[in-house]
Image 1 (cartoon, rainbow, N blue to C red):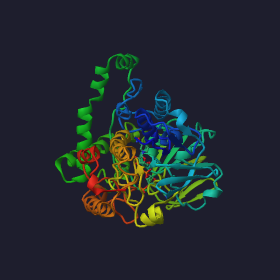
Image 2 (image 1 turned 90 degrees about the vertical axis):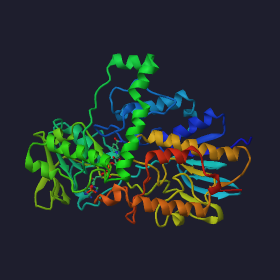
Image 3 (image 1 turned 120 degrees about the vertical axis):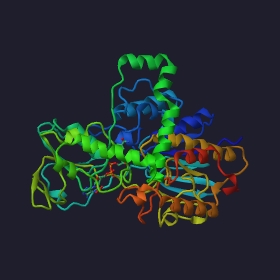
Image 4 (image 1 turned 30 degrees about the horizontal axis):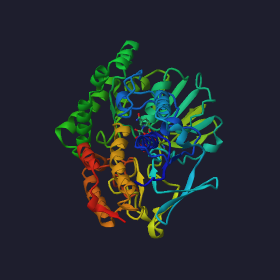
Length: 484
Ligand code: NAP
């Protein structure tokens, strides 16, 4: 068995998973490179008021480290961050992480990846695991006048906690899950919350109840009670149904999910005029569904206001909309999402024969089964392009992907080969099938623009159902791999 040197890039949920799994496998020569000073990825960077994951808490955990201590049905951001920190400590991988170390370049030279760090250091690894995240690079809108605003402005992933909110007028731009969670958290707390919404989104109701101390005690002491709460089979079936709604938007199941969104708006907002202003013009699930227990209530709060007019520009006193109205504000929070086409970039990645990732991704980011790319041997991605991203646990997705990657690493470890990457033919065929399938999904047919679409307007996420994903991740199709 070869003693592989493996570099993991990113100490978020997926990078920690990879480190723990390699550590459990007995591999000793592992380094996790993390550009920030703390692990946690998304959950380190997002600290905005109301931060919550919309996946049930007990499913937003690693399969080998369940957490009986979640306080709510949907996990609050600070509990998720604490969970990842203590899990990394408990499994002995915290000391494998090198913080404040950003990789600027990966170069495949003499069957090894050569790593260049921004601090001038270098390293060499037999394999690289890119766990660099999806929703990572903030998307800043180009609104004229941003620099003349007298108050505070920040992107929601860079929340400035030194700025007080109580007694202040807060503008929130954007109605993805982030904007919805912030408006729900601030309505009634800030003097005024003004929600600037260009296109409203559909909202699925969810009961975000609390777990009592008695329940948590029970989960701690009784694995059967925790297993019952988790109901793995029921959850898997829900995820499968959900993905069928995405891939078969005209099916009866999809119609039921859509109806639940229509009913939520219908029954939660009595005011007919407000209801119409909150009504999206696309099919539910075309954009990633928002699960919220309280947004419709929050936006009806006397100190909250929905603004549908387009933003014209920003002035020293606030935001001026296209109808001429000036909305006076003290704080502007940009809940305007992320640049979801970045993935491993801005790292420069040069594979076999000098092939540059920018060239390979010139048309769109793509990866064979979301894991690997031809001519970039021994480079494997977790939550890379074309993988499933949606209203389900990305922890579970990463675990399935790890199961697959682990089998590729076995080929390197056993010495069966020194380089492994999918063939060009297999990658092209996968990509063609994927694009064809993507055109039947609700992301494509549902009449909306969203971050699921690539620059060519093709949905970039996994376009098939969840069961197919699990099946494909169970074992690589080795005939599709070039092993040298
Ligand atoms: P997002 O879903 O991409 O939403 C961005 C919002 O900003 C949209 O409403 C968009 O409007 C608006 N926007 C962008 N540029 C604008 C501009 N120039 N002027 C006015 N409005 C503008 O971003 P997000 O809410 O941060 O969410 C990102 C992803 O993270 C989503 O998939 C979200 O579901 C996920 N997320 C998940 C959780 C969770 O609980 N798991 C929590 C938070 C976020 P248009 O629709 O008109 O483009």
